[in-house]
Image (cartoon, rainbow, N blue to C red; front, side):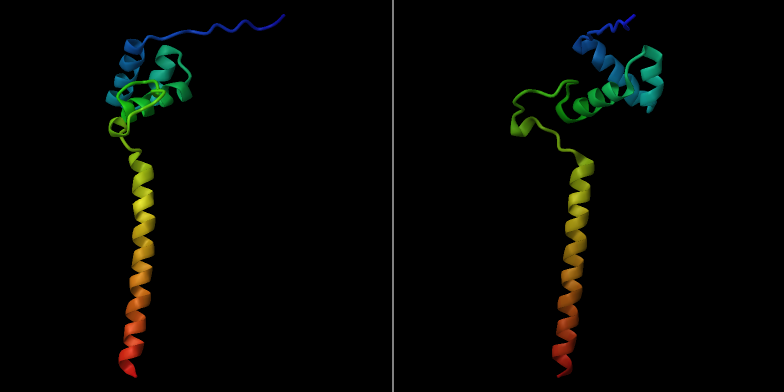
Length: 101
């Protein structure tokens, strides 16, 4: 006997309501259990809502409409900052050595 899988469909209004509840409560897993939704699916909706102001990623988002992924941007700039600090330290060391001669 095979397992029957039912695929539920949610309207944008339903998805937004779930996402807003997640954002208010701060718990993705709690809301997923409450409404019997896959937590990964709910997390995807939340991330899309934060980036695009809708729960489903637009097919062709316009450049100005995309809200950047702040975590990714933060890490990118943090890495660039560390690299620049290292370059400055190297240059300062070279200056000290040149001034000693």
